[in-house]
Image (tube, rainbow, N blue to C red):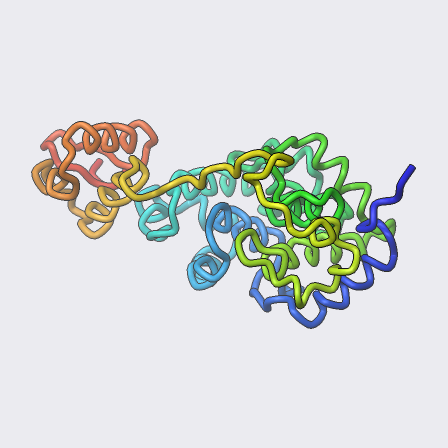
Length: 303
């Protein structure tokens, strides 16, 4: 059986040495940050650049340093504090998660992956990220950056293709160093390496510490639209989507604590059908509400 290069001590040492010099000093990586701070950072970072997350994370941790602090906060204030971070349902789920942690786990985010998976809004990636990055457990943490590095270095493919959760977790688990502390650092390093060096669009191959062992580089950097790999997946657009309209509607009510009339909301987007669809979805998701007087505002603020 052929040994994966990324599972070798040489690869581990290269990536860990690179990480020691290049890692970004995000506050949730500070050893003094507890598991709650790590969990908040992971939820905020889903489909969002970490540089955008950092200032908001600092505000949240100063305001709500423990799960019980956030769990007691009114829904409207949590959504307002989420600001323009995107996917505001994450804020509601994080509040629900905080309430469960406060009530059932003595205000301490649990360590066990299976227990973490039972929390509201915590999926496979987030559960393992908390176990690994907060508690130092040697579990595979697989995001798009990790999958891309593995696809290129090990398989010579330009990108990771469609996710295969069980297979991806098994493959990455087999790459980890046996020592738990080293394995946890390697997981963080591999993810950072994909984010900063082995990037999706402009990989920095000339600076890559794995360049002499990369199957993708050796193959001449094949692209998605050749006969071998098929056509590259089309990136998801944002402009003109219901998600954009939802964000515009939320922006209005976020700035008007007393609520606004429907006519004010009607001004934010010209397509009446799409605008109404977005509005109804916000109401259904519990992000907005309509008062008896016909005013629209953040959920819980007009009651």
